[in-house]
Image (cartoon, rainbow over all chains, first blue to last red; front, top):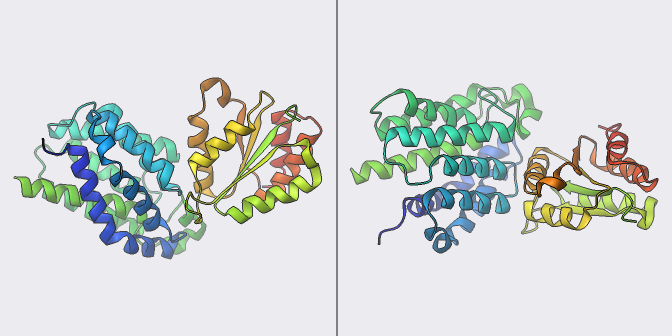
Length: 203
Length: 128
């Protein structure tokens, strides 16, 4: 039996973070407390060690369980945010998504859950500034390709540079946060790009 | 002593949480239960939901538990731990918006007099 979609994604993100965690912490050093990469790595390492248990679960439940592992391990504010993202996605998608509409519905639920947990919205220089445009593109651009989704994510992360942080540790810096990419947004964009690349390869 | 509100201190730093607890405990002795939750599971700076949940478990009584936090991550991780409590306990565990050291001391002295959770919370929140 081939690996479940969830486990394939976890393995993919695990390698991605292995390569990028130092860069993510460096971004966080500029406008936060410098531990974003370390925190995300701690979370994904724990998930990667847990693949066998996750493999036994249906897709939606597996996402929920993965979110729970992340919130227990990450140790920073991104823990609860990734937890609500995965929990929201899992609740909206009991089974593996098959169509663009399925993926859009799943991401919408996750994005709204992150907004609720973080008491935040777009424009505050957070991961929501990447989640929202990606979700919106999936909702509104029928037949969007995975390359185009990657491009939306990449641009959205880049666009966080211009924003003044009003949420999270970077909010202490106010105007001085301008010119730096939001680390949480960068992580989300990298994950989106990595999953989209893999989908391109499978074509 | 279970007649008094208990206090859970959540900081990114093990030393800050422990220091705030020690300073308050010195003033109120055994009259108030205080719990220090600082640092991540592997001892780095950060907060640990599992440890916060365990502290809630130990601290809980019907009199209530006040949670004092330092920065954003501590607040949001404490909110997650509260949301994971059984529904009937959630309203007895309250997150307050207070400076961690001064707030802990104010809360502890207020709690030692047998004050209610709302009173203890209000006392702590005089120091934001």
